[in-house]
Length: 191
Image 1 (tube, rainbow, N blue to C red):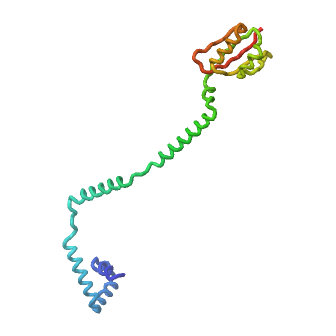
Image 2 (image 1 turned 45 degrees about the vertical axis):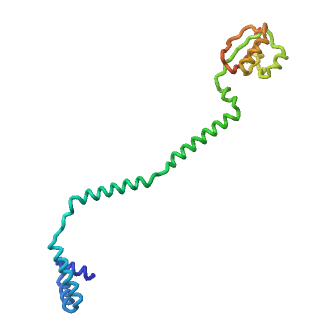
Image 3 (image 1 turned 120 degrees about the horizontal axis):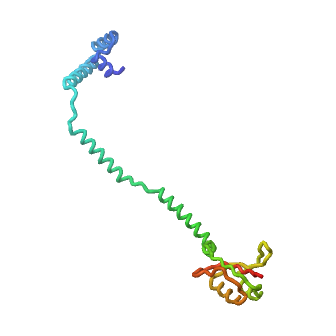
């Protein structure tokens, strides 16, 4: 136990009989110890005489203002960079880049995916082979009944030229679109 702890216990009356006897014996034999004890006794006596002091009424508002100022300063100094937004925008740009780079490999894919008007043309006789050679877009196929037909996609003005070239051989035309850029033709010979 330090001297100050011993002095405090003696002033508060917390020493046992044996500890009190040891303290008195030391006070009588050690003048330095006695002077420290007397000084401690005076200080504690003065403090007890003064009693607890009340804080001034302006102390709490002053502390609150100081804390608010510190808080505002801290917010102003620490502006965080929006990394999440940068990551999101980078990912979005990557998706658009990949999507458009795939579309630009075949620009016609955009047109081919659109709804293409279909024109069904019935012919009285099979078209001439030289006429079919001048329109390589037309491919020869057969339906379930085994009837031969020609089909393919082409630009609308080119389809109009084909229909004109077929002339009197055309029996009927199902549909003639207006303003379409691309059409799908099906030419079939009907007996």
